[in-house]
Image: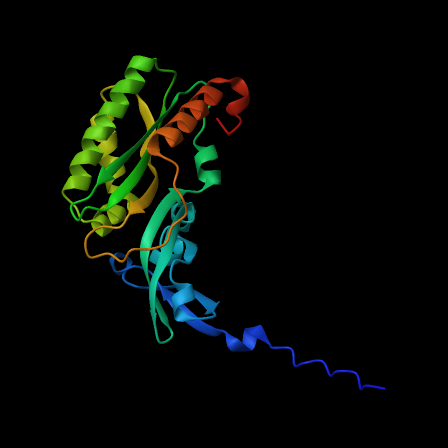
Length: 235
């Protein structure tokens, strides 16, 4: 009678992994943002780490906890992983808190080229005091486009991303829109790096929806916002 085969040793996959410290991009002073296990240096490239602006700046937790940052790993050296800022966005909770009954929401989405030829998709959102008509919404979009196109063309991607995260672009948007309508809030609610620029590593990415598709979705959000059921946040 043949002897039963012995079961092979079960590999402990966790023991085979190594742990690396993920650093923020150079524009955010390369502060540590995560400590993650990886199977190999090459497999780590492209991984996206989500954190908040508060975790980076350690200031103003009430505001900065509401801004999410996405860092994508560009390479690993030893136990250190370098990244690029893949994007930033308002948290869903923050966006919902901005909705008010009897106000209008204006969305604007476009792709821009930075000075180093990175393609960046910028999402602007504005909330007014009281309702405004389509003509004024269009004027706000035109004013936003003027500001962002000038800023993007004159900055490297990393500089532009910092300006968006730190709300300095939002302040300029407000100054250029306040004469059109009474603005309660306007800002860059989201930025996505669509294509790497000169001197930036080419990173794997999932197929992206076009700016036109996302703008259509944003317009549908505005229509929903006109309905009383959408204005559920505190007045």
